[in-house]
Length: 171
Length: 75
Image (cartoon, rainbow over all chains, first blue to last red):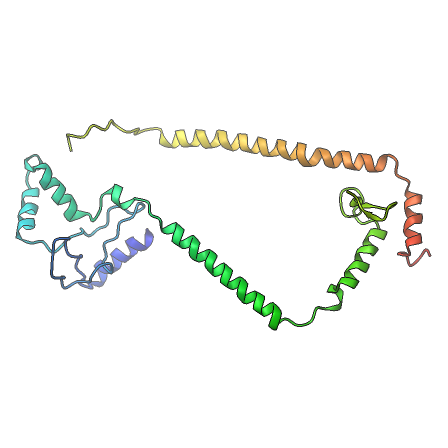
């Protein structure tokens, strides 16, 4: 949201001469930027941008803008809706509607996680060096036996799960 | 838009309502988590230590360790 205000300030001060995007009914694009690279962007946290949605108005729309300068009670319902559409691209309901984008995102995330898993598997087979001595099964079993002899964590931890009479893990 | 049939929305006290909801919820959740921890972790742990040390013979324990050969100063 802060980026939007900063961007509007930049546009105004820098005098970049960027026009608003053309109205939905236009055929030829205006001299300004084409959507979506315009300076109009509304979101729930920044719902009323500084520039109106349509700045290139045809004669009929300009007449409506003139009428807007008078008393608003003279505007018909259709005219009010037309003025709203000139100023804003979408209503709040349209702007805030939910989408199914999250499914695509999650799908891609899981896909690339799986791909990474394949890469790491390949690395394990072809790249990793031999296991150090202390990680071989023989060493690890001797290490475990020594810990049990020392009765490490006999109350709730490792040695508490070992049955010293039967010399096996407790069920 | 005078033809709409929507009622007037809630205009005041929005923060107070939200705060009340969340403060009550926070107190309840904290108490719940604390009670759960006490009865699922702390009490069983105290009991386990009490049971272990009730009939603990430290000399017998030492002899077992010595026979297993882990000491350097007492073979």
